[in-house]
Length: 308
Ligand SMILES: Nc1ncnc2c1ncn2[C@@H]1O[C@H](COP(=O)(O)OP(=O)(O)OP(=O)(O)O)[C@@H](O)[C@H]1O
Image 1: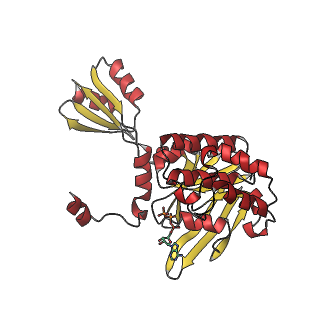
Image 2: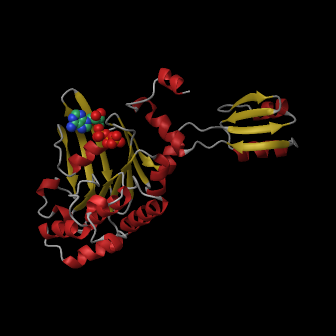
Image 3: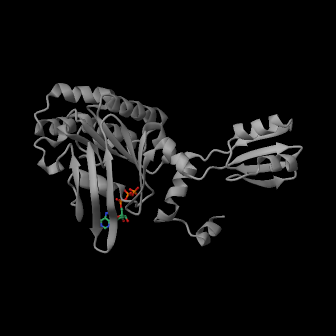
């Protein structure tokens, strides 16, 4: 379990993380989402003691990271995939890490297989592609068979097969009862992997929810209807909590009712419908809606104009 409790991190004037609280629980994948500069990496660094909160506290399996005698066996982390000596081979890098914790060679071979690195295990890391580096970083994170796995942008640089591999791997780790947390700034991709979502912007918590919850809390898109009798249908549908607007000569947009309810009213009065579409808000729209005011490096209208 990872517990982030009222954490604030300042760098001089800059507030990178602002009274942030959330819990990543065992048995599920938590997606840690936010636009660039939202404070995700800073939070992850504080979770593993690489940075100290200005205030608040962070616990891994009930204790601050530094208080664990064998931290690799508590939490496996991928923070910077390229933070490996380029002259080392994948095996020597993992063996070096394993020795610090008395982890047997057998486990090194296991994680090499698990990460699909068998063919390149004896090659120098300096020649690895970004994707291979990510796989090596994930192998290192799993080395200590930890109860908590935390990965910063794990699918960055992976091809579609690699993305699928990460997705299945993380689902498997959560199914074994581990706490899995991954950061990303891509909503649609994260929604395929994570069930629990923690969304941050400018260091603050914007949402602590599920994929379904995020969609539900974003304003719905209404129902679009096309009929030969828009006036009659409009009168029949109008009522408390329902707004009906005319969008074209035979088209209406209905807010406050489902497509099923609109269809039932039309059928009940013998009104023919040519179109009945519920506009669903996409996850990406929901995410952008939520983080709109928290994007640090948004293109200004002038810039957008210049790009056109
Ligand atoms: N060491 C530092 N000194 C000063 N400011 C910092 C430092 N580290 C991070 N920041 C600032 O804190 C804010 C949060 O940065 P952080 O890297 O945690 O965001 P992020 O969500 O991980 O972004 P990205 O998706 O771009 O990696 C940013 O405005 C960043 O410029």
